Length: 135
Length: 139
Image (cartoon, rainbow over all chains, first blue to last red):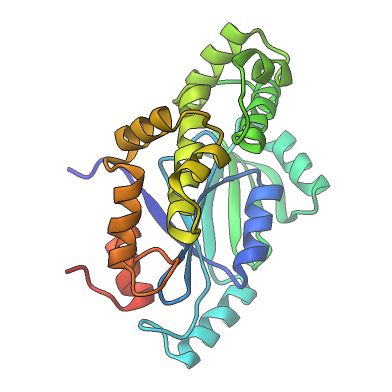
């Protein structure tokens, strides 16, 4: 039986800039920030109240899984907003939305009543969309 | 679960721990940052984050020690001090309890696995990621 999800990947354009966004704008904590052989940087963040699910902030680079062309295509798709970082939950969507807007986070939809709660939609500083949901 | 306001106050205490983990910290000093009594802070912190302030502090210190053991050339005693412990014995036994290996053995084992100096070996991250990003399959 699978009991939980431990890691999920978000492709970002620049790990330093993404770290700044997820840590200083969204208020996440850094899980791992390690230099691994091959000059790979293993960088994870998580929301303070849930360290069990770590988001891996990874740059698409030429390597074993991507050709140079594929990496460039993925970077271009990230910039176009073709990927999502997922759904982040909050206890008060309106308040969190206002706090994030004050910090300069870009939103494409303000808090709106949905069937499942109140939801706003924002963008990280790579172009990945995310939802902010109050259930 | 804490309300939005209480969560912010709690986060102030949690951030205080994260910013000062390398120095001796008392529960009353941490709780002051959150404008709560130590007992109340302890209870709400555990309810909200699933770990006590002390467990969080230990986790931060051990994680930082693991990183320094691999990526720096400091002695174990130096690392012990840099992450906020004054007793090498306490640090070593705590590290052993959390990681399953004594600090020196942890360093020796991971350095032996890595192909590059002062870098974590690919075995330190989930194998699917090592395969995906580094093209390495676990042996």
